Structure formats: structure tokens, C-alpha cells
Image (cartoon, rainbow, N blue to C red; front, side):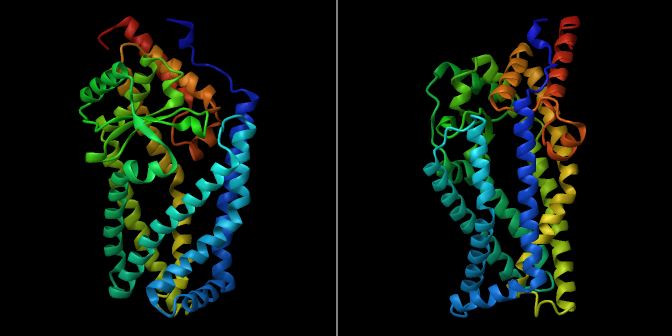
Amino acid sequence: MADELNPVQADSPEAHRYNSIRRWLGVIDFLVGLAFLITLLVTGWTNWLRDLAYRLGFQNYSLSLFMYLVLLLVISKVLGIGLDYYGFSLERRFKLSTQRFRSWVWDEVKGFLVGLVLGAVVVEVLYFTLRQWPQHWWMLAWALFMGLFIILAQLAPVVLFPIFYKFEPLDDEDLRRRLVVLSERAGTRVRGIYRWKLSEKSKKANAALTGLGATRRIILADTLLDNYSPEEIEAVLAHELGHHVHRHILKSIFVQAGITLFGFWAANWTLHYAVDQHLFEELSDFANLPLLALVSVVLSFVLMPALNAYSRFNERQADRYAFESIASVEPFISSMNKLAEQNLAERTPSKWVEWFFHSHPAISRRLAAAKEWGRKQEINPQV
């Protein structure tokens, strides 16, 4: 088989340094957020912010809750803006970003406002259930949260994504026809194929099958369309379609539902304990919001290795479907190598880094699996 099937390529010092800095940046960001929540609770500053929010909200509960959320998000943003800017400058230092400072600032503003709107909906619903049904709030809140989660998954491609990126229908009719056939063969009907103008902000390449139901669509970064062959683009999309064939989205929703249900149960137990210890006057005292956030953060941290392992299992299944769906694994291998180089990804991270941080198998493992599949096809084309 061609030399390009050889999956063993060492990471460049640049790729290793970039990914190492990115990981440490994520760890520091996590610790800053964790310290912020703990400080609010230990010092009692959360009660002071609640009282301030009541003054700003004219003693109206719902408006005061919203003002409390605004105060929390503003303080959190101020604490994290230095790390956010470092992340922006890091992408530019490694020549992965094309975004200008003004555009980045505008994205930060939009991200804050979107987070505020979504956060306001979640906390208002959450504390409404706490006030109306204090004994069983967590079950009702869980059901409402899952409903919101599914609605957002449907709306994201048509409402949220366009806030940050530009999309236009794919104008390459030959490629469009090939991708539609590939999608129909996978048993999914897409509502459109779009050119994602990622190059306005980044030199990285990506593709995705997004949305649910009527918003189901394929988005292809222009950085992918302009630098990859049709066969390589098919290979990338075949992997994404593998998630549909194996019902990974539906399965992930069920997994998320189970974890979220446990999370709400843990939050309910924690809130009752806090009230019993006279840390808060009642369950609906929104000064306990940092405590709820802390439960969520700790649970997410503890479960992250398990969830990443589950994700890597799904990714391997999607890769296998891609191998089965394309004429040859060579375009898959060449596209993975291109993506690794273009995105400055690590091909061979250490085992513990892959185990804890990575939602995808190491690129070296994915390429080795593709090479093995290609070897079997050479020996027995019916495999």
C-alpha cells in the first residue's frame, strides 16, 4: 500500500508545545472557576451579592434572581478575561488564528450575552420549580432541563451558530451530490449542505453533521473545502455520518439524561444539607446558586474520564463506518494527517493525557486502525 498509509509520525515540538499550553490553560481556567465558587460560599459573599441583587431588582424575586446572575457572570468574566485573551493570543502565536482583536472582543461580548440569555432561562426555571415544588423540584427541573437541551440542539444550527459564523449553501454541485448520496446511504436526510466560513477567524479545518429533525444539516469549513480533495471530504463526512448510523446522538442524550438526573438528585441532597446546617434560609434562596454550580463542576470533573472513554468508543465506531463506506481508506488516512498538521493536533499524546483529556482516540491509533483495515481489504476484499 502507498507510503502515506504509514500512520507512525512523531509530533513536532511545536504541536507538543501548543497542546501542552492549551491543556494547562484549561486546567488553570477550571481552578480559577472552582476557587471563585468556593470563595463565594466560604466567605458569605454570595449572601452580600444576593442582597445587592434584591436592591437592584426592586425586591422582585425573579428580577433580583436575574440581577444576581448578571453580577455572577460579570465577576466571572472579569476574573477570566486574562485567560481568555491569552487563549486568543496563543492561537495567533502558533499561526492558527486569522481573527483580529476587534472581532475577538465582539465575539466575547456576543458570547457573554448568549450565555446570559441561556443562563437566565435555566436559573429562572430552576428556581421557579424550587419555589413551587420544594420537595420534588429536582425531578421536574430535570425533565424541563432535558426538554431545553433537546430544543437547543435543534435550534443551534439556525439560531446560535450564525451569531458567531457565516454560512452559505455549498455551491459545488458535484461535491454536494456526492455528499447527499453518502448521507442517504447512511439513512439520514439532511436539510442542506453549507459552506462554513471558518477562515475568517481560524486556519483550522472541521466538518460536522449538526441539528435534529428539520434542522439537520452538513456544515463544511471553507478551510476544508479549499484544501482537501472530494475523496478526503467524503472520508471526513463518512465519519460524521457514522455517528448517525450508530445512533450516537440518541444514545448520548440518554447518557446525558441519566447523568443529569443523578446531578439534580445530588444537588437536592446538597441543598437540603445546606439548609439543615443553616447556611441558607430556604431552598429557594438564590444565594445558593454557587453551591449548585459547584455540585455540577465537581460531578463533571469526576465523570470526565468515563465520559471521554465513552466518546472515544463512539469515535472508533464512527471510524469503522467510514472505512466501510468509502472505496479506499487512503483518503481517510491522508485527511487525518492533513487535519493533524493543519490543526496542530497531537498524533501521539501520552496515555494519561488521552485517558483524561481526549474525547477522540489518538490520531496515531485511528491511523493504525485504518491501516489495518486497508491491509485486511487487500488480503480479502469481502471483509
